Image 1 (cartoon, rainbow, N blue to C red):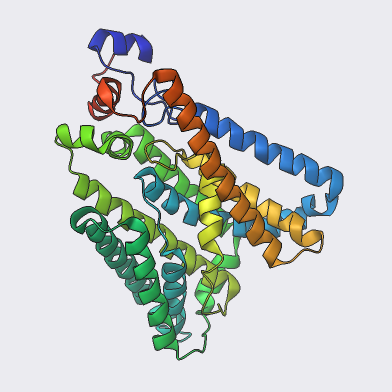
Image 2 (cartoon, rainbow, N blue to C red):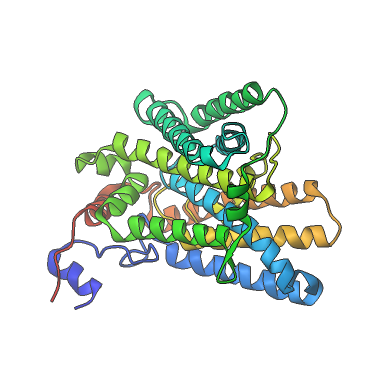
Length: 366
């Protein structure tokens, strides 16, 4: 018996598939079956174009040098994706990454024996930042942009205060790990894959994940179904901060002596990767695979831009254009969907049924 038969026998929509799609391409993950292939096509076309116009960027050495940066961006973008799925936007990326890098450089002071306590401090920092942001957004009602932007300013101020404007160097152990390879694969890539798999399994394969998607897709229906919006909202910001902090630690180890503003380049890039990956800007649907492909797409695009002699300004322009196009496409699709259905928004009985289907555990089918 397949998923559609199960939905007919239970009277509820089928659960979302592993890629985040619903029974009929509707609901919180409704168009993920379109979004993920779009990211695949864009990435394949980019690499094909690279082979034609800038073949040097596809050399083994170039790909191996690009992979760690794509992995770090993927980890950051996954955290951003979780927040976007809840209808928010995390602007504290730069602050969390920079502060995490400062902790693993200043606290150990070059001693490997103090690296583990430093990593625990980073985890506590991410936990505190996520809880504060989640509380401000879900309990106090502060707009996500304002809450996370304020947190970012405090974190960057803390970076300047604790360093007095002078960067430090990470312990040799962290650098060795960040630069090392396992079976020929960079450790940073392996960690990014592990993060992606864990998040994908939790979001798409567990009851917690179905409820998480339901809260982002239709908060009113989720609240009516007795789902705690505060718990899921705060948990989202904590998970996002942990992703940003992990990226900051790995980036510091990879660079050895990170600059104080090391996280600045990951805010726009992370949002752009989420947009390329097909995550709905209004919340609800999104896929980890699409986000990872979006990070790979942007990193390879940056490699091409640099190979053609363009500077950082061009990279920022491209990222800004991608975000703008994502917003425009989202509004066009929403208006088109509203015209077809004859109403604006996602509410109504269909949304409530989809949310109920996402939150209701399925009984085993023999």
